[in-house]
Length: 349
Image 1 (cartoon, one colour):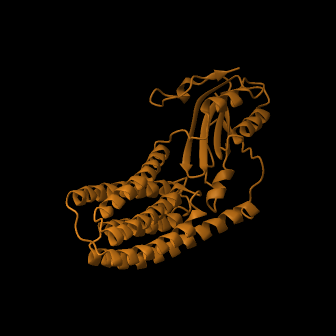
Image 2: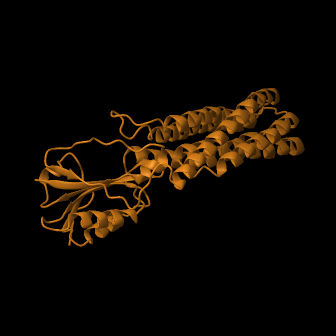
Image 3: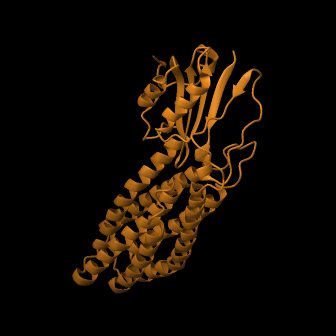
């Protein structure tokens, strides 16, 4: 049976400087028509603004990486000389920060490489993989620090509070600078949020180390050092777990949190000329780019170009950037084989 489909890919132009390549021909008898809400050439002001935003975030990542790596050596030496677990724990997180920032910087560049016929969406998913790696490393480092902290609670060791305080204050300044550099861009992608979370965890670690150093100097409470480490780690684990969970959801192609699948299906089924909507799937390609595919039954003889246009308008209201909609005169059973689960029963008018 002949079919019509339309693909709207203007959102992909927002994420990279090229348009997602498509095959020039499909199966015999298939007709394709591209329906866009507006033209989106490469010289569009929004595309330039996105390019500049990406360049700015990459530059800030590089500065944060340089500052963090330079201070890492000083904190390791200070923690070893002062015998402070809180400082060494913070240095451990700073070491993961250096790796996380370096990975994020590499991925920020690599994910924008051009698409190929073998990788039609390019390397956008690398941002999600980087976020998953960063979150997992944070969780593993936190588990190690908790283990060491519990051991210190049972047998407190002497701590040089003065040196510990000096290094912790310097670390607070470095982490505050890095957090400030990344804060304004942390919402742009899971990759950047993972890097920001690493830096923020070190900022909390520095605060905990300062409090512990003051208590050691003023009260002689050696137990303050491992307690500060435990409190810091608990705060870090919460953010790291959320980052890992969101990255896994993207890799599993889960429905994005802001998409109400029932409401989306109802909005599409409400378009005049649409008798039924089935095989509806929505997923995230990478941070900020949502894709969708669906089959809509529109009896032959209808105004299919208008139906496609209104379907894309309905989908666009849900902030979906890349939509593929197949129109069918009658439901095609082979469009949804048993191996492909469908979350909703077909919606009809």
